Length: 272
Image (cartoon, rainbow, N blue to C red; front, top):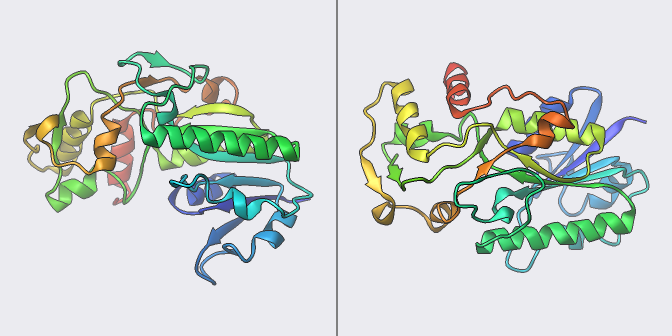
């Protein structure tokens, strides 16, 4: 039987996963617009689930919980052997900048993190009911062509936000796709940190991006006075260094872009 992945919310990350899986896999991506993807959401779910051997949801939870599970429940999935759920590293909360790996306790401190953890639990219950393994991907900030610091720099709206001691991990979308594909093929189970190996301040990333573009480095702006959206500001509420131990040890994946410098340079070479 051909391996078939039903990718719910099939966008930037789902497409990278599809590329990484390669031609021996069939990927059924969902869309709310008929004709834009193989599966119209939600009308085509029953037929897609009947064919799927693997499933991943990229859809974030809302105020009322996970929006995908109520649609899936009640449909049969006779061939399903694995589920992946794209969560976020916010489920770990703040560690004061300390290193953590996949075995760290869950301790979300933001509303976003708490919603993610609640959604993970709901997906776990669904997987347990079906008797299939669930991989819970705790993903760092995703960047790639068309979605990087270059966009803000070119638009003249980049800020070099300064919050002493604050660091973030990131993951290039191509590495993300490679990791998810490997996890699907190996039917990985449990929590998995998906991140690069080089936590760094966002101000450093902005400065390096400006250097690559040959643009002036944006002036430093104190965090308290920075013009940030509520979503962006919430990222600064937590400070931790992520170690993606299982990615290397259990999946055997070597990142193509282990730090933001290699990732940004690759995006620029590709014209992104």
